[in-house]
Length: 312
Ligand code: BYC
Image (cartoon, rainbow, N blue to C red; front, side, top):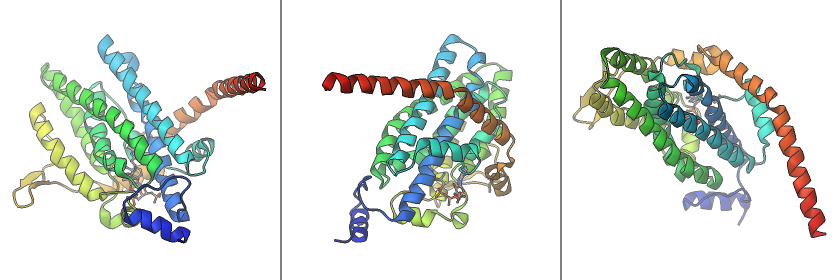
């Protein structure tokens, strides 16, 4: 069987492609792009919430938030590890991120203005992330699919802590309820846009679906997210800021308004409120951490040399 036929047969049988299997260059490139963008989103995603660790209103909230932000760093590590199985180096990927040549999720270019934003991010952003990521556990590329299983377990805890925070605020004082509503107003549309452009404007969806990288289209996942989230907002007693939102009996789904795709394009092209700040903070952290990476590499080399000596 030719390498091309073997790849096609594995995809046809819905089996996993492993790093040593033959794969078309374009499949490899698509995965590197998506996994790198995903990994970058995890580590840049530490910033908006990290801003609130020192201002969390109680020890319990601080401990929970600290753990969540650390989880995001861990997700970044699993994902850079998965990308490396495709023959790229994580240092190379970080250089591309820092040079603005690879993307991270649009959502992290919005500011976190109040404590309620921490709840809204957990509830909506992690909620959208899980909706998108559960199907990735069945992605055709084995190392990515396996990384996603663990990530999804942690994301579901993140989503629940966000919802619980929103519940507490929405049942609190009038100004706490207003703060929760204001956070929902600001995070709703950016969360709806996280799923990517509409299918008709998505250059990669068709190919990625045929290869089993994506299992659902951007619009299908967006619809599921809206359908899942509206009843949750009702339970919170908060109003989703979309005058066109209404239940469609025939479709068994909610109809909803059109996001501002002009804003989406602006944000992913570097023109969002926080793009410059996020990248600058990331580059500074990377430069400040150089001595840690050097020390860890020197330590690992010493340990390996000692082990080799002991084995000789
Ligand atoms: N932001 O043809 P399309 C998280 C780009 S955070 C920026 O639909 P595709 C979390 C896209 O790259 C969530 N760019 O592309 C962390 C493409 O650009 P190029 C991270 C976007 O890849 C911490 C162009 O638009 N999750 O988990 O088939 C705390 C056309 O799009 C975005 C992932 O990364 C966007 N939102 O589908 C809390 C999941 N959307 O390269 C939470 C894995 C699209 O053509 N990724 N673009 O210039 C995916 O599932 C897919 O890559 C996407 C896009 C659905 C995002």
